[in-house]
Length: 511
Image 1 (cartoon, rainbow, N blue to C red):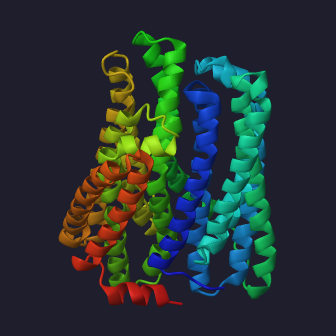
Image 2: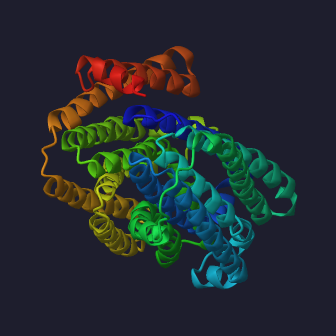
Image 3: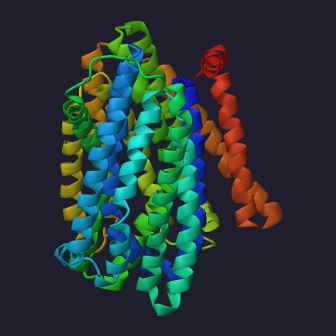
């Protein structure tokens, strides 16, 4: 089976992730137009709970990829098969239990968390999805451990297509019964997407199974124990972002009520934060998650085989890629928040100020994810979890205090997110430096991407204004200016020699 290098794997998963996110926008745009911010609030109240399970389960493919990469490095094909079989049985069991609990205690959970009772329909549908998420996560971990990210990439697109088509269809069909039913219809898309992604991965496994000859070796007796040892901290690390969203879903509506806003106003503001802002932030985060998925088995393999020189180069490349992704994303979303939201959400730009300020958290968030993947890839599982937990505590305290002030309101959650990820990022980078005893070239890794990003955003803002003066179309000027910005940014990456041409060429040709 073909293996992919760090850059190639990141590009494949990143492009698939971004394409999947854009497909997701085709879900959000008609849904937003149909059920408005109120309906998105009902849908999003329960969605973070589901995404918390997804994030916790996402630690399993990362842990699997680490174990499989190590077994594959010593040609233990039977061990690879054992990891898959035992993990699949365990994950399906967990998925069934979680789904049963969510369905059984749906109304008590909604009542305890003080969500709007109208979110029940979305919650009940989403509760079934963990079963199929468990299957997808397991097979993705299998393929990523063999350093073949293509099945994972394609499954993301298949999943999103199912989500978009089914979600929009059922939301439209159920809309006459009420906004809460339409929100439940949108949730059906999540379930259908998970089913379709699972089916694709299962079929792909049976196609490639014959390429994996079984070798007679002694059976591994502690696979689940080894997997749990790696998966639990990795899952906790991967889940922190979603846990922060879950915290928002619990704290923000409650604190907005304390600040004097009505339940409807709270749902609208929360819908803007999660239904619009987080949707747009997911585009650069798709690249970050792709980097982490490609990074884990590659770092684990280099560390396991004792190749320090190769390990240092891969860490340096990962940090550099993180900043190349995050810095232009931050500046683009800060200075182009209104045009982007006006374009994406069909002239409904309400909440663009939230996007402006929360974009400041992107560099901290992406570097936190990358450094967590590196530390856990070398077996240092718990340090990043502690750092992320501390960031979570910072987030909770700041959100709880600030959102209750009417003049701060939803921006309290934004400030909490920035400072929470900022704390986690600084602690992770400190641990990375001390653990591996390496020096990161910050001129190449940070200063040069920052210069390229600044030049890019100047060109974007100038071209947006110029094109608008000629066309009087906000949509066209936004699209053209973003395309110009991408071209200029890529050009200056080469002019400033952030990446050497030969380095990229060799990486892309590898294997």
